[in-house]
Image (tube, rainbow, N blue to C red):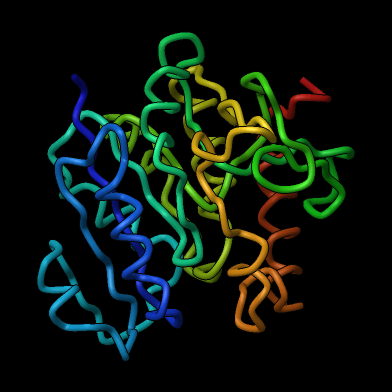
Length: 241
C-alpha cells in the first residue's frame, strides 16, 4: 500500500486543527505521518501540536512555505491541506484510486477558466458549486493538493516570485507539472450522495469566515496578476489548449 504524509497549515484558525487531525486519523487509508507548518500563528493547543511533526515560524512566510516544508516528507504521496479543509474519511482512498487512471495533481475543488485573461471567470468542480460523479480535468485545484513527492522537483524548477507570497501556489503547481512532467490536474469524484469521498466536507461553513484569503481584494487582484503571468508563459488551459 502506498504511504501518504498529510501536511497541515496553521495560521489564523487554530479552532479547526483538532477536527482536521481527527479526520485524518479516521481515514480508511491512514497517513503515515501528519506534519504541521505553523505560519506565524498563535492559539494552538500545544499538546495537539506536540503530537504532530511541527515546525513553527515567527514570520508569515505566505502560502508557498508549506510546499517547501513538504520536502521533509518521506512517503510516496503527500497531501497538503488548507486550514479550513476537513476531508471525508475516504478522501485518501479516493485519491489513490484516481491516481490509477488519472495520474496527476489532485484536489478537492477545481477551476476551469472560461477565459484565458481572468482568474475569476471560472467554473468550480468538486465540493463547491458543481459536484462531479466522475474524475474531471481542470486547470488548477485548491483547498487540498494530493501528489507524488517526487513532483516537488518540478514545482521548484521555476522559483515563485518574491513579491507575490500570499497567492499563486496552486496555479504554479499545475503549470509546473504540465510544463516539465506533461501531467494534468484533476478533481477526483465528488458525488453529491457520498461526501465520504470528498476532500472538504465543511468548506462552505469554515471557508466563509472574514479572514479567508479570497475575500481580500488585494489578494484577488494578485491572483489575476499571477494567472495572467502564467498564461503568457504558456500555461495551457483546458478550454484553450
